[in-house]
Image (cartoon, rainbow, N blue to C red):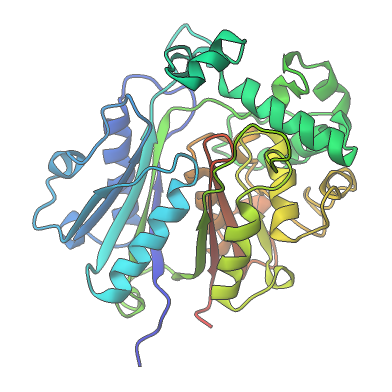
Length: 387
């Protein structure tokens, strides 16, 4: 009887960070080639390609032509912003399990960072050129996603009594993980005092509450468990997935900022996997801001609402802690490639390739993706066994 879980058999990560001279398409092509080679396959074995790209880049369906892929049975662009990676893996898994395709590559790449410009300029244009209701927000001073996440974080902090030090504990713990990650952009130690001394971006968010800006690309190869048996890497099984799109409105009595799509997609993915949070060894959580990590952990059920800040302050999420979380440094200290950041680290750990940061117990992982201003959420449950 065929196994019901698709498998991830390869991944590729380009150089990330301040890397210039390539476009998003170039990074994507490199990442795909790296992932396919890592899987022990050739491009001729690929019969499915799923592409995720930020608007305004040169990355689109024509990547297939750039790679010389022929006779594809599956080709599509998927975009739910930071939730896209989890959704792509779910779609690829359904495709290989149904027989629609056998070997599907999922890829994301971006090139927002330009020479001689700061990170603050990378994503500002889309806000400044907003139309309709969003242009009214811009006129009121909401000129970037930072302003909108600051609104969510402030509401969350005021409602649950969390402090800036709770947010800072997340930044400090993830920097501690990044110290042993050779691909991390930020590899100098960070103290809570240094966090507090970092400049305000938009209160209550300090600079060190906000994710990095990175150029680069990442890709993942999904195939059938039968095909995986002939390949060199230990397969990682896609045990469960879920997604949620809350449709928040900025009105009185809305749950915006307090409850996220993680509260729906996380339990759905765990149910599909036949697991609970107690079965999870690793938490690789989308952390575009320190706040999003805390609220996601709560909505997944790793602690009660309003308790994640104390959990972070206790050291539970840091190296040596009881709930290792974002073991590569996350988007705050490692690199920012939308939902591929937590996914690549989960695969690294599950395959036992984490080096000095490798977690001893690494049979299961939960991976989150968050897109828009808490508008979209995707969750994966991955494991080194199929049942």
